[in-house]
Every structure is written in C-alpha cells, then in structure tokens.
Image (cartoon, rainbow, N blue to C red; front, side, top):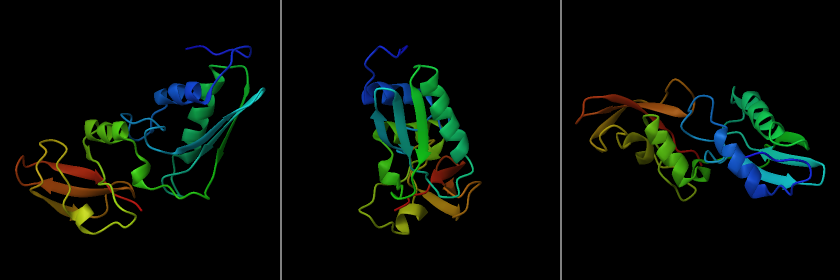
Amino acid sequence: MRFGTLVNITKEDVLEALQDVKDPEIPTISVVDLGIIRNVEVGERIIKITMTPTFSGCPALKIMENMVKEKITELTALDVEVTTNFDTQWNTNMITEKGLEGLKKHGLAPPLRHEGLVQIDMITHAECPLCGSTNTVIKSPFGPTLCRSLHYCNDCLNAFEQFKPVE
C-alpha cells in the first residue's frame, strides 16, 4: 500500500498499515492488536496517532512510538505525530482476538478476559499454549518482564509464560 498527499487517507488505512508494526518483544502481535493504538486522526496535512502504553514504565515505549511514526511516514508525505497518552489506562481486555492468537503463536498463554477485576485464579491457572492443558501450576508470578508470569504444564511437561491479565 502506498499513500500520497493527494490521496484521501482514512483512519482505517492507517490502522491497516500499523498491522505491520509489531511489539518489539512479541513479534507475533501488532501494536493495533495489542490495543495500544488509542486514536488516529487524519487531517489535511497531518496524521495524529495516540498510544497508551501497556505499562507506564515500559522500556519499549519510545521504540514503538518511533516504529509507528516511521511506518506511517514511509507511506505518506503528510506529517505524522505520535504521542503517548497516560490518561487512559491500558488493560488486557484491549487485546483483540487476533492479538490473543498472536500471543499463543509466540508461546505465551494469553490473559483471560475479565470484568474489571483480576482474580488470583486468572493467574494461577493458565492454559498451556503448547498443548492446551489446564493442568498447570504457577512457578513464579514474576517472569522475564513485568507483564509475564512463569508456569509449568503437568501434561506436556514444558515450562511456559503467561501474559498476565491487567485490569
């Protein structure tokens, strides 16, 4: 897809292009499906994109902002402004169904959907992304990143990580 300044660019065009921008740590999920693209405004001379980080201290935040800006800039001569907004708190319910599948493809147990309250059972009983078993145990609520926990599957005998649910 190639945009130009004389072509009418829509919000949907921008979101489609951003499907190519993947989470730097989880390359099987786009920033759109991760749910961190909160708003896209397409003006006559500028495209404004607003992001919400998964965690306020996410070390990949600036990298993702730059990746989003670079992707849209390479497609259009319009100015592109990418800002991060901390007013809206991200939660794991913002991950799309396609995003949940992307987490599984990466070998991560996806977070369970919640009703605004994360219960401890949602973390302690993760479904193994390798065999689908729920005969699993949590080994540590702390994984290699803040958003992951460590688990073990008693059926396929593999260790795995869960993308922890966040409310």
